[in-house]
Length: 357
Ligand SMILES: Nc1ncnc2c1ncn2[C@@H]1O[C@H](COP(=O)(O)OP(=O)(O)O)[C@@H](O)[C@H]1O
Ligand SMILES: [Mg+2]
Image 1 (cartoon, rainbow, N blue to C red):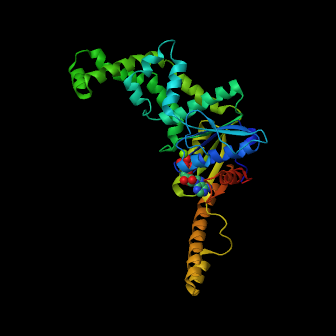
Image 2 (cartoon, rainbow, N blue to C red; image 1 turned 120 degrees about the vertical axis):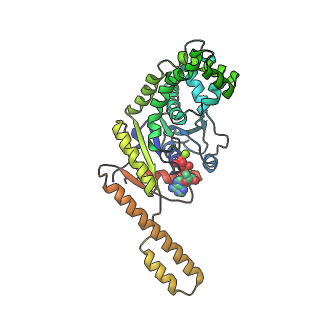
Image 3 (cartoon, protein in one colour; image 1 turned 90 degrees about the vertical axis):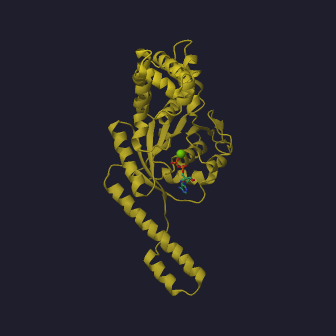
């Protein structure tokens, strides 16, 4: 149903979708593939599974991109990998945008230190900020020509796109003003109560934080919007990842619709972990044959096949329903495979993603 993306046309690729569908794996796999085809790639992962970091040979994967050995090389390609570090990214944002000499007022504040990683939407937004930082670094140094970004396992599809606005609203001072109110009432019963509840020290920290955010985060929302706006630049594409299950496909539909509404460039949908290649022998016939044979091992194998064939049929029904409702949408099916935990396996998965669909 049409190719989802052509990597050679892209400079930025964002993998999104529900949790656990294979976003991180897909991002890493496409990175491996592109590097093997001569691109200089950096992959920003979010919460990579331990086995994936092992596959990339990077047990100590962190904020700073590190070269993955064993990919690229001869063709001039290279792969660097990193993990999103929200705190570090947030600190960098503060440093980059606080007026001269004011960043420390936020960075040193205990309230910031506690809350910076737990504001609603922080992780989603920081993934976008980190993308911006990597993009700036790529432009300045020429170190990368393709940035692949994985996104956090958002509870709902909307979190990821709403985060900049929500976080921007917070840091622009709306919540800050609300928090500051008891302070203005001075000596009020409310303040005394608050002080007892949260401790006077903390209340003072909150006030200091509130007044610091007022100076440091002026215009943050505009910046957040601008960051989101950069996602509409040419050479950028979104890939929505799903699994062949009702909930994941429904989530994928929301993403597709939302990307469309926000005029963000959608490449297409990757239906990952599909049971493929169960061949001609139907579930019913395998089950019937299992009843007939006397060898228990053969009977067990036939039942395993019947199970897989049944799953495959159910999955294809869901995929067909999903596709038929969206005729213009490019989508591709990617096989469930045993070997996504090493580099050749990842490269194989990427071949599936990039197939004509
Ligand atoms: N095509 C596939 N075949 C088999 N296992 C897969 C496949 N894609 C992903 N997985 C496995 O599914 C799990 C979730 O994948 P992950 O990439 O971490 O998802 P997400 O980033 O969307 O939360 C991991 O254990 C991964 O190894
Ligand atoms: Mg992930």
